[in-house]
Length: 47
Image (cartoon, rainbow, N blue to C red; front, side):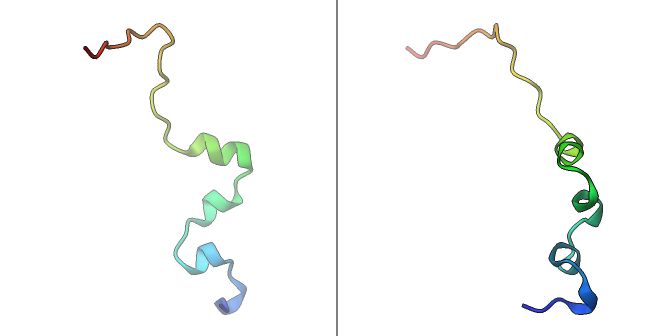
């Protein structure tokens, strides 16, 4: 496939160029994270 005007594939297809411009550690930190699971969580017993 040929992209127009030298754009990167993600930008040409409507991706977010800001996410691509961030370093890997910042890119991962900018994503929404789920709540961490507490270690002392009661495990439900299926009986």
